[in-house]
Length: 140
Image 1 (cartoon, rainbow, N blue to C red):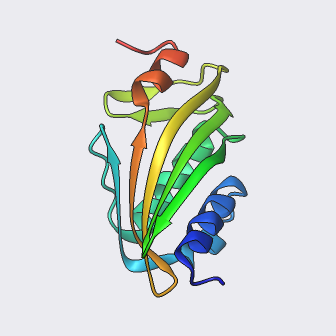
Image 2: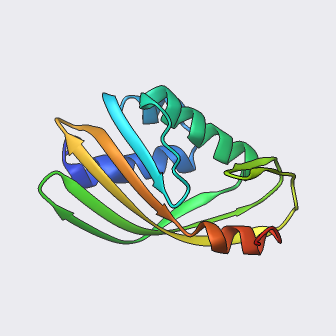
Image 3: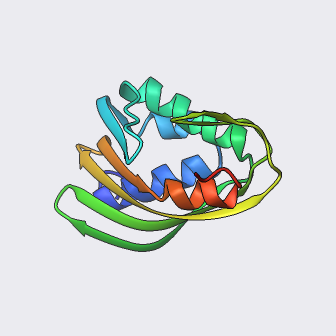
């Protein structure tokens, strides 16, 4: 069922992987909130979130999210994931912009979705930024 929280989370990952921004947009609640822990990234609302997704795809055009495990309870869905792609575009990070390195990266992450009435109202993204920076040769 499309309104099921697990289905919504799965459709969001599929839309991101396909860079299907209209399909992703219809899954987002107008009050949607996003937080990327560890870096303090909080883009405002659905437009901010879609912009962030587009920037990731610009930096790593072939990036794909692979869901390794999913757990759901009520309106909350947790996904353990890997993000794998090739860094061929500028990547915005908290300390600035990393120019393209051409390096292939694989980064572990956990996504927590909250779904209400068939739409995502929040995402908390725990991304291993240190591993990403290390693979790009930019870790401190």
